[in-house]
Structure formats: C-alpha cells, structure tokens
Image 1: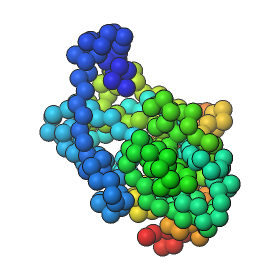
Image 2: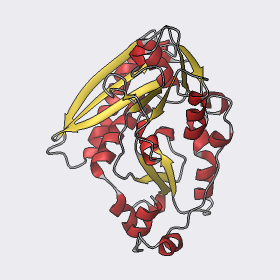
Image 3: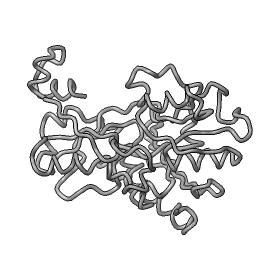
Image 4: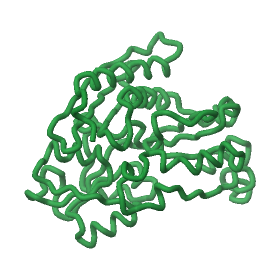
Length: 297
C-alpha cells in the first residue's frame, strides 16, 4: 500500500528511495497489538486497534492511516473519515488444520482456535460439540500454536494469509454466504482527517465496487451496533448491476442464528454508495428486531 500511495503522489513505485521519500512509513503499535492474552471485548473492543493511530492523525503526526477495515468500529472519531478503499482481497475465512480438510470433518470435541466471537459463534452453530479456545496473536504466532498442537484447527482471514504469501496454507475456505465474514473483511481502509478526504491522490486509489460493497456491510454493522461483543457477519457482492447482501447475527454460543438477505439494483442510481449503505441498514435493522437481546453477551 505504501507503493500505491507513493505512485498516486507521483513517485516511481519501483524506486524504493522515491517511495520512502514520498510516503514515509511510520509504524504505530496499538493496544490491540500489544495485549495478546485477552479477547478484544475484554480490553475495549475494535477501537483498541485504531485509538493510538487516530490520535496521531488528529494531532498531525501522520497524514493518513492504513487499517484492516474489519477492525474499524462502525462509528469513527469526530474529524476523521474513511477517505479511500482500494480493491478488496478475498474476504473469506480460511480453515487450517493438520487433522481435517473442513470444519465439518474435525473429530468430535476437537479444539478450534480463534479470537473472533463471530467465528466462534458460527463454528459452534455448525458444530456445537467443538471446544473453541481463545487464540490471539499475529499470524505467525497462531500458526506456531497450530503446529505445536495447541489447537486441532484454526480460522484466519484468507486475505491476511495471501498478503503474507501464505495463501497456500488453508485446507479449505469457508463459504461467505453460509458463514458471512466480518463486515469489511479483506478490504483495507485509508483514514484521513476530514479536510483531506477529497485529495486527488486518494481519488486515484479508490475502488468503487469495493467501496459500494463494504458500505452495505458497514451499514448492517451500524444498525446492529456492532462491536466485539456481538457476533455479526455480512457479505456483499455484485451480480451485474445488482448488489446482493447477506447479514447474520448469532448468540455467542451459536445456538441461535438470525439471517436476512436482500439486494439493490444500482443500474440507474447516481449515489450507489448511499443506496448500498441504506440496504445494509435495512437488513441490519431486520436482524436486530428479530433477534432482540438473544445475540448480546
């Protein structure tokens, strides 16, 4: 992404020195990165992956922030905006194991490692016999725990594996309609101060089909007041000019699941992003109204 930004600013993306000069990289370690022994819901939710970075944006130490969109809360801090979303990587969850090809093939009582409440709930909905254990850490840490036998299988975002050159590792991929991923999964978000949102270099990076699809997913997230305390999945995709969306929410132990699907014809609509968001809000509200308090921890 650093090279993409540098190119949009006029630098040669193949010239490392020019890239570093045009878009110098500043690494900020967040609370979510540092605290690895507890679930996010125990330390403040998704905002723990963005708080320190957004503070650096607001006080001018950095000019833009790159986030995994699935880790961003539904509501942004005042003064900030998601200014650009590049083309999305594969949004599916990946199943990794040395004992089975698919989640359905795991032996009864097998240990499944994940730090995601959504993945926990979806897995237990399909396999209530599984022993789901909290597994946090970066990709290398989680893979090492799988190798060490701490879990019989783990679930990870396929996009993250592909970006690390590890896309060959999964035994299988999870159907995103049957088990919708986190809203925005597979997409990166460039966050800026509101005054910079329409800069020319940001417009050059935006990928409108991705922007529209994730607008629908994050609309559902907003309607469901999504956080790390709620197991929410949403998946939007295009079939021609039709945007289709599936939204679901589950009880933490997976014993109940609520799903609604819909679509929008975006052929004639000038503001496709707003229409997609409205679709997401509508379906999210339908799930919320049906589920009531059955999906909250």
